[in-house]
Length: 462
Image 1: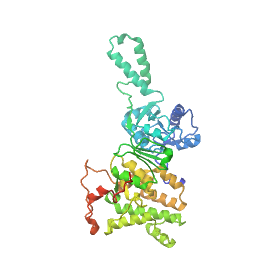
Image 2: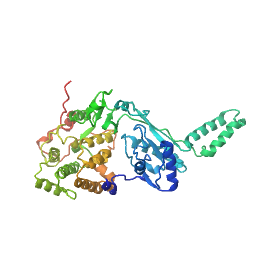
Image 3: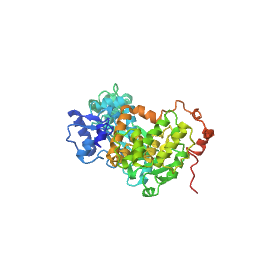
Image 4: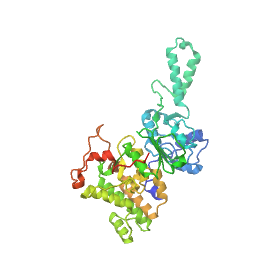
């Protein structure tokens, strides 16, 4: 992994903790949450306050998430909002933490100026002993306070002040006045400078979790489902209408179609579909050539094709499917019949814009793992696992590509790949590009909406 770290593709954008004062604040927070301290003089932390260096020192990479259910966090600075979340157990955790920091930024800025803020993402589930417990997670509430209890004390002082203002004999209540003075020494003037961190709560209907081998839960769609990366039998019986696993490609395709979650790349707005298809084809050739022992570390697109030809390799079926789609998009070739059983099927799709786009693209990235760019952007845990098993030549090629084509302009790369959100609330009917010609172009665009991305996905017999 050293290659990825050196190129800023792993452990990037972490917040440095270097001053003795911040290290001591972190240690006091760490001791409060875990009963342990670090002897390190400097280290880096992610958005939750997790440090890979501290985790390595303690021999425990889950020291802020011991049960895997309710992640604890340590905030030393509001700058943590731009940091990644390492060792994520749930796909929504970073988004929740970032929103919590942004919605309370003035208060958190004032609080972290004097002390560390500690808290927990409370999902009302204490442990995940069985897959069925995942369905008990309905809402995540962020609970936080400083080590000195400034938020709780400020709330208590505010209640006492209200009593002082409203109770008839409060002016003569020496005990009440003394308690107010004592609390004010801790909190400061809560009238002029209120200390109130909003208790943020977020619905948790749809998410991915790393637990139980990887599970996707969709509850807010028309036809809810649980999709398991491993065999679904390992999850046992769950109270959901539909259970699928990655071996059931047709079932997953039907689920995505029935809920309107995906669209073909060639019909997506705001992207250069041909460029994306060519790049996906390159990724597939890199994997094939590196797997055959070829040195692809510095190979260009032309080099890759020459290597494949020289080795006498037959292009993988996924490459053939994308090539047929590219011919249709650019050269007037016939409309390709790509069924859900075809290796190119999930490579040819992207999530429709909407609230679930990030989660669906995460699922598609894991279903089409040779697209290393999408895997890196949408599902870093799966990318790092896959990277560890690649030949060295492929590791070098992928690291160079991501550093050159993605890391230098992350926002631009994401927009080029996924496009932007529609400007209007309702999309106008989509029309095929005017330049497409040929007998197959008479197929109505609306027909694709009726029968699915590449034709009707057959439903299993009832």
